[in-house]
Image (cartoon, rainbow, N blue to C red; front, side):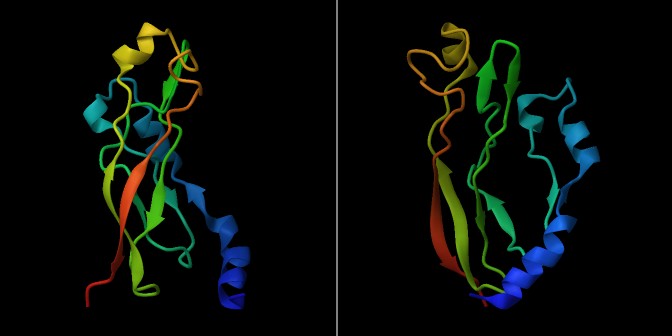
Length: 130
């Protein structure tokens, strides 16, 4: 095992946190779907640079009668100085529309057996450009 990485994770993981101001800002009730963004997450420097697999962030991944939010994300590591190989997002599977889910009131239902939408993303394995 890579003792350097293990040590870094053990020592620095407690420093990882969500930027509370960004989370509160993203929860504003007057946001339009175009303004949706994932909460800011600050990771220790030993973590790779992450990229979202969803080119367009879904407006929801969980849909209940009293709760509609994006709770699920797909991330991959980009090429970096520390790691020359990584992933670039290519696309994602279509998401169900809110109108479709509303036909069944909420999720899960007979057409969607989970309370979460399955996120399916395509990535390309790439090498960092020199």
